[in-house]
Amino acid sequence: MRTIRTHPTAVGRVRGDGGIVAQVTVSDAVRLQRGVDITRLPLSAHEGFILSRIEGRTTVKDILACTGLGQDLVVDALDRMLRLGIVSVDSVAPAEERDEG
Image (cartoon, rainbow, N blue to C red; front, top):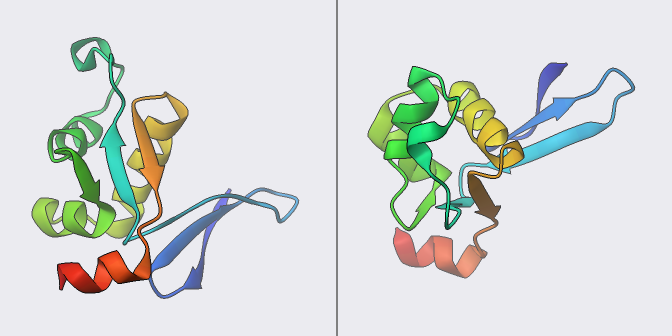
């Protein structure tokens, strides 16, 4: 799989056949799924650190700002956590984005 940029704030993953697998923007909101025992998860050190920054509904933009990690690393970690059922990801409406700034 290779990484592409389809928008300045988006990262998409492309399968060998050219189909986009996932796309996460820096304004997406991430939330820890209820009932997940994070002490038993097979996470890397980076993934655990990123997970520790999720408090309630947290935007990817905020995670990038508070971790200092690169966008590709954070998005890859969140994609894996999403596949494992650890987090859910919701798009933030443009009006909500404006209210934050």
